[in-house]
Length: 102
Image (cartoon, rainbow, N blue to C red; front, side, top):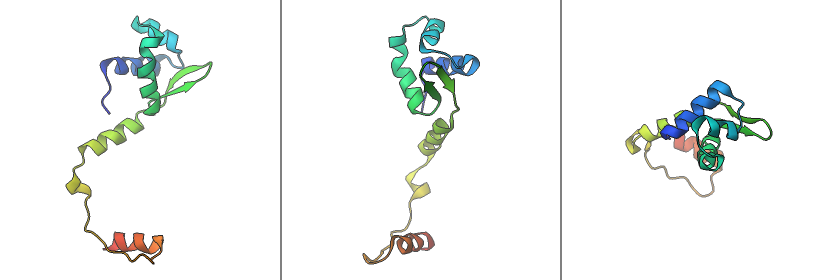
């Protein structure tokens, strides 16, 4: 996931000063809270920031972002596998074992 320059600034502010409210972040960037709302939502959903009511935003890391970046660099050739035929009566366990071993 590529962060916009504004999102990167938000992350820097929260990392350095968190927990911090949306109003305080907006004040640092000379923007309104409404302008920042979509960016804060994206950063929260991506697992970079955590929002706590009456506390503010805290930085929790970029694990999700790094994982998404790793997937963006993969090609189909890196993950494709040979087709495996499994009978409809096989258990899920047996099907998985067959797929992994073949």
